Image (cartoon, rainbow, N blue to C red; front, side, top):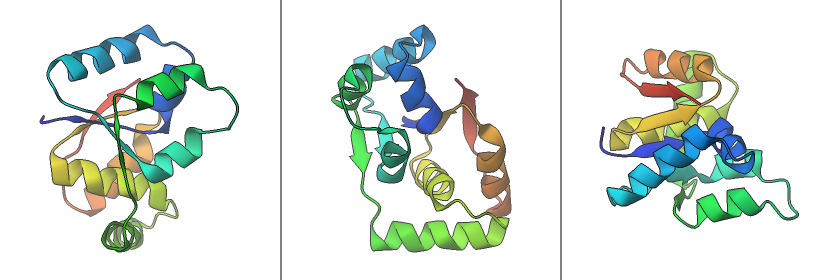
Length: 126
């Protein structure tokens, strides 16, 4: 594992002060491994207003833009997996490219997409 990618479940866990998530985040920062949050994932978790814990988490993260290239790769991954969730696909495509561990509360769709791409994806339930 070279780094960590947060799925929406990890962002929700941060907002509700989940101790396990914050411990993982702290260790990542101590290793100078800045966690990645795909932009679409941020859109899934952000509800406006004061989300103090989520905002604090994001200051230590890199928000990965959904570029044209990433969007096309995510769409192609959806097609191969029979998925209709391009945000999940963007998590998988980015994490595979970086060799990241993915923190998620819902690993099933991510596993399906990774399997369709014939790639191994390291997941941790949070």
